[in-house]
Amino acid sequence: MSSWADEQHEPMTVDDLERLPDDGRRYELVDGRLDVSPAPLSGHSLIEAKLCGYFNYVVAPKGYLALQGAGIDFNAQRTHHRIPDVVVLETKNFVRPRLTAPPLLAIEVVSESSFFRDYNTKAREYADFGIPAYWVVNPLLETPRILELRIDGGDYREVQEAVGENAFTTDFPFPVTIVPDLLMADADGPWDLSGEGA
Image 1: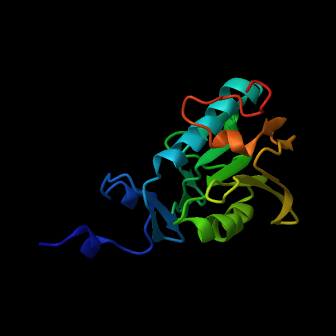
Image 2: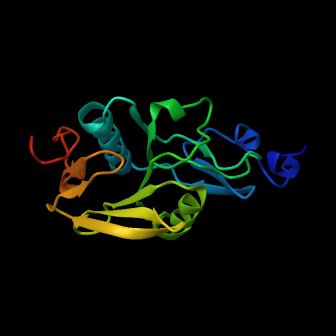
């Protein structure tokens, strides 16, 4: 009796991902190779939800959309597939079943298993794909922080890092202010992440 592993071929495509178990883990592809991450913990998911809610219902102008866990095909062969924690795109670039154009912004929320991937591997891949801005939200440290990177000459350069109660303010992809500590607030805490409505 053959297993799925016996039948798999290289390189894998997103079609192969549909044959994998629905076990809550995140299955991505890097140049046709499987990259598996554990299912996010509840605090991680809450940060993603807060960011999407804040973008979609508070700060994003008409014509923009924030999505949580949307898959992106990085190439026409569909052998490179990533699932950022949060993306922001223009609504005109929303397509089904998976995104194919670089979003304006990708955000990764760091977990214990994703530290190197989020700060290094994905930063390189997202820059190569042409995503103009990349944020790394790190809730693991004693004081949570947000790092903003922007494309400059094909590579990301650090624009700013905000920590704890210090407001993170940027103008791209639209004006946004976020207090990192508010991302860590309880589920019934403020959803206006600017701190002005807290």
